[in-house]
Image (cartoon, rainbow, N blue to C red):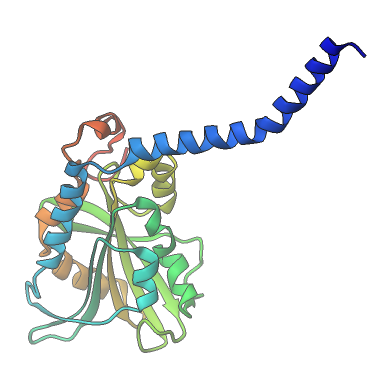
Length: 261
């Protein structure tokens, strides 16, 4: 074998051995570049901090409703890593009716994935109430200040650690800058799949939880009476875009304020 051919084979063998290390270096380098590009800006930090502050100042009286803080499971906080969180039991002056209000805001949209009621309540010991076919979609039209939207209604049965009693009615909606107020988890998943920029805008969720299988007409009255009086500025802030240049292009994907494209 000639020296020239042997040198070529040795060079090729060395190159083959080096390929995995070159690939690792490339991937690590690309990761560093990607992380550097997706680091939150000061404007984005301020945006999330403003929302957290508004949530911390959420009133204990909403119209005729007076609230008292209640504890949520520690595991839920660990999973959600909330930027802001309210868990509060409200009752009405001089009238029957009580509800637990939860407001959760996450800085990463993907953190909310497991908190969709059809997922999180069964995971806590509840099951879909079979009186209502699983495929049926029940919603309630609501007004929050001058904002109109639909909130989804979920009905569960059996006992669980979240609420006493053997039946439960949950009303829920998600709030995002890019889609407004939406009920469809698939919309959030689509937004999350657009990349870290879209996910970093965050997402909020409003939930009203009531004991029992509440009759629809009574449910509508209770939800309207409470939700119409919550601070509109907070909802608008969770729907707004931060003043940051790197997320400017995402504005092209915004939905109208009703949450419909």
